[in-house]
Each structure stands twice: as structure tokens, then as C-alpha cells.
Length: 221
Image (cartoon, rainbow, N blue to C red; front, side):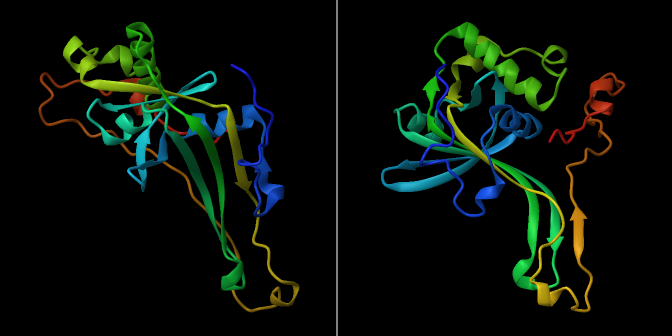
């Protein structure tokens, strides 16, 4: 896969440019911690932004869904797409309402998707999607049958034109506001898994697998 020189004119961070990140490995770390993206595309002149899960393998993102999905059918037409992933790390409370912010890590990928036709790659991609979200689950669950595979479309989005934007740290106030009598600081936020809840139809009852007991989306950047 050719490596596009980053940033491009389309991916260069304009607002707060010092927060722009163009390192591929840093982008991969953000993508690997997340698993929900929003995909922007245009169908019949109408813009749409649809949330969906994804998985990454090397320099590609894989997404999947019903073969009848409008989004997937549109993406197969060589239409340009925009994929965004955002991880929210904290609420930044400044002394001035104007200077309130958030700590976050985000990625934007621009490009075109390709339908995965090869049955072997399609199955690999579905495993990548499953393992990206829940490592260990693919081998512990029933594999998709031929009918299910026919009803499912898998698309590959090359990670070629991209950028990340990252904000960390405390609030930044105007100098004259630092003496304003109010609390200021950061409220950290994180995605945290709760205790697994058994399906009432488990027959016979089963112990929750270790890979689910210890599930987390750890911070990697």
C-alpha cells in the first residue's frame, strides 16, 4: 500500500494546528482503542453520517453490515467517504465558560471503500471485526454460516489519507480570569465495562469466560 505523505491539504488540522498528529502508529493506537466510528457519505445529494463498528488489520479498516444497507451499497459505488473515530478522555472546566473544552483523541480518514469479494478475506475480515471489539469471542461463538455470509457485506477502507487531533491537559484561561473565584480543572472520563449479565436463556448455566470478566478498553496514548 503506498504511503501518502501526511498531512495532505484535506487532512491538515487548521483549527489549533499544534494538536494535529500525523504519525501512523499514533493513529493506529487511537483506532485500536476505539471500536465505534461514524461514516459520512452522500447519497442522491443528501449527506448522511452513520455510526457503525469497525476493525483494523494493518493499513485497512473493515466495516460490515446487511447487504441491503444503503450506506454499504453507496460505498460500493466508489463514492468518497469520511470515517471519524473519537475517544473522549475528560471534561475541561475553565474559569470562563468560553474556555471550557474537552480532552480527546480523534482520527479522520478520507478515501474510498472497496467491497471484499474474496470469501477467505471476507471471513478473515469478520474475525478481525469480532476480535477488535471482543478479543477471544470469535473462537468461543458459532461461526457464520453460508446464508449469513451471503446476507453480509464487508468493505475495506484503506488508511491512506488521515490525520488525528489530540487535546490533553488542564484548562487554558485568559490571564485576567485566573483569579476568578470558581473551581477549574479536569473531570476524567473513560469507558468502563460493568459486570457481565447472564442471558436468562443460558442452558445449562455457564461461567462467564475470563476474557469477558477482564474486558476493558485501555488507554493506549
